[in-house]
Amino acid sequence: MKNNEPIDSRVDIGHVHLKVADLDRALSFYCGVLGFQLMQKMGTQAAFISAGGYHHHIGLNTWESLGGSPPPPGTTGLYHTAIRYPDRKSLADALRRLQKAGIELDGAADHGVSEALYLHDPDWNGVELYWDRPRAEWPRDEKGEIEMFSKRLDLGALLKE
Picture 1 (tube, rainbow, N blue to C red):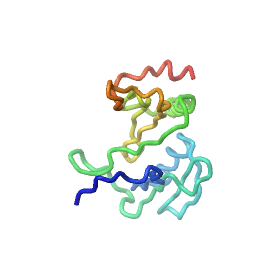
Picture 2: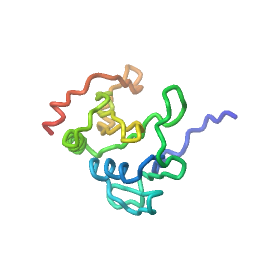
Picture 3: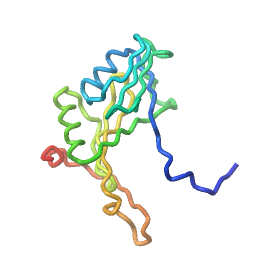
């Protein structure tokens, strides 16, 4: 079935739910390092975390993954969860938190429309931390279409925020 009508522009992604092997280890990363707030914990099976008191932006559970290992390369699944920060200064704060915790980045990129940090959580789920530039600053081609790219992000300049 093909639908040529675009989805309502007010639609957004409300939360992501991740399978983890160890709930406390995952909470140490998402709350302890990144700074999310624990909203509710269901024993050792599930936790719901957020920024700003929302019911949850991320759900973490061990329902099918307690003690499990990450999926091997070459399998399907979630590539990464992208966490959007409100501005460049808050992304710089995220980088400082990662560095303080000794967490290495897999990469960092300037995409023209955004700047992003790439890493993995303790369960080897991909995580992107990023901020969007204002739409008026997005690079566009001669037809006005968005023209994203991937260039090395200057982490030193980011940390000066």
